[in-house]
Image (cartoon, rainbow, N blue to C red; front, side, top):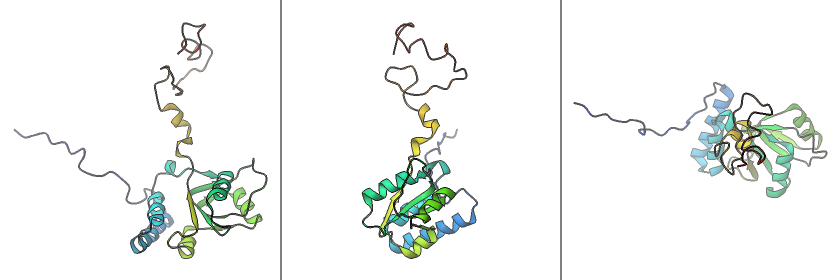
Length: 189
């Protein structure tokens, strides 16, 4: 009689290349893998790893957030903001400072505003030529837990001190809004 071997833990599950079939993304991964192998700089390792993450793991960043982080972290105005994702426009921000950015994508409006204010937009292959070791760059990323689905994670809805959003089909007055939510209707958690 044989033994029941469990091969569940036999391998490390992590991406070693992008799932996307985008040829240009594949070339960028090749480039940053080469740079990391030659320079051993953490910057190149992080960029390479983030390039083959799933779409949900490189969320967009607004111009406002990029400008705020550059104000805090940039050494001088030649510093380049590096975002492995999309940079989007922020209509709430009336004036934006001069920004040098490098991103996978920049939306049309954001692109116009950056260039209008004397900033520059680099691609990752241009960045590799400008700063192969990641010097004078500020690496940043959007908030990964900002997606709506994260509001459903956490302590079970209805449990005391839970702010987790329940999955509800009906959103009327009588559904998950009264009993347990207010003391006049049974009890309040």
